[in-house]
Image 1 (cartoon, chains in turn orange, brown):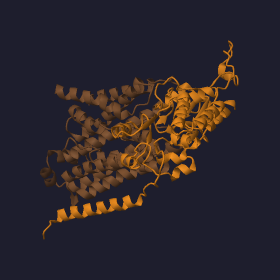
Image 2 (cartoon, rainbow over the protein chains, first blue to last red; image 1 turned 120 degrees about the vertical axis):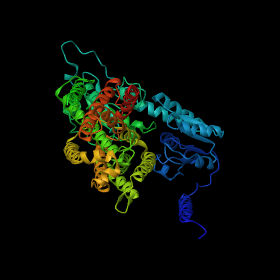
Image 3 (cartoon, each protein chain N blue to C red; image 1 turned 90 degrees about the horizontal axis):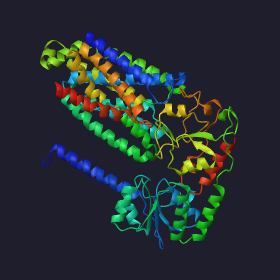
Image 4 (cartoon, each protein chain N blue to C red; image 1 turned 90 degrees about the vertical axis):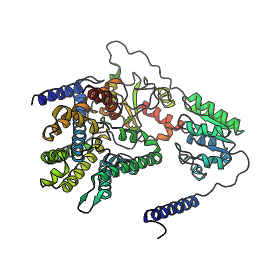
Length: 292
Length: 302
């Protein structure tokens, strides 16, 4: 026998691997040919924004996370949000790549080395979101659409002006309905408990809706918090953005929100977490909750 | 005996500290939470250290522990798969993962009539690597649940207890207790094996059979532990060594010692984790941050 048993196994193994790679590779269709300005968006929110501006024809590549509007799902996928494929992006020969920071720092560096134009999206505040829309509007030559989108958003996302007077002496603030700001706890994940801190537009939305984030003092955007801390801070309202029920948690039964049945589970995470036009819907829902 | 009294006092002190120290005022609800957390810490720390001790005794290798044998990584992998399919970490999946990888390692190391002990460790380490890679793949696929996997891999004692998982956790603790007692019954055999394989075989101990029993039972225990509190590292590796320093080489004494010390160590690590920041830190971070310097000090002193 020319080959030993082991080397034959290795050779067959390699052949199988190569075969599998070929099959997988063939299954991935290439992108449709495209002329004109070409954008690859690695940010689901910016994909929504570009659709809203009526410049969807410029999008040649998006991530698998770009699932709204429905048409976005049909655009060529260059990977997911945390792991976009550099090779696929480059193969599209884009005129502009929209990256999201801080999550996509690595791919941004790689693209910079290749001298590809980059648009950086990392909105921390509502103003950042508006500025980015205006800027991308300028790039895709839809300034007017961008202006009107931003104005529309500003009109619908505006501070609820309820005068918040100081609570008079000898009256406990929370005992009187509507006498003080509702204190809200937003839960993004049940294990571990992930919520939102101050440096986030969702925190800003909450404040504009007339509420107070119980973890607004934390300087991280998505802090992991202990149960005890939530119970101690005793929120009036709990907004759950994951599918797991929180009703019968041990030790939570004295929390005001749970006692008063103020736990909201039906909100769509994308309406609150994605810095795009649909924030309007999320904000309207927040306002409704605060008015209840 | 006086050593036991001393260590038990330290253990009780650790329990007391973890109950009184914390960010919130001690009300009935908070007390309930802290007690359940203390129980989880005792359960996890004790089991990890006990299993580490018994495996180190069996294989005569100071590096052996649940993690180097693949069960812990297997459990983490199972948990991640469950999370991908159902959105939350399913204890059943973590448990199946530990058992599945345990069986795999066991099959690789199996020869006619028993196990090759060297190959068992090698297979365990190899499978650990494989599982870690697969967990990474799942992290990529799951994307948003990155936090969950991170805390699954580093250990998380702040598990939210609901009526849905409470009875299951209690059942698992009871089962674990029975399994621990079952394993402890082999202390004499382990002592003899530590003296040398030939002696043990000469005295009529079926080493292969014993290896299989201990290997499968610990895989089961680790599967249960990881499914509830995640993969807390370091305890299973280091605590048995400390226990041997204090209680000597006899397994009759050092195995319960490992359990007590493991529980104490995890309780203290968790108390520190809860006090140093407002955030919930994965307890595995603290176990190595605190444990490594302590261990180096202890060994340098000797």
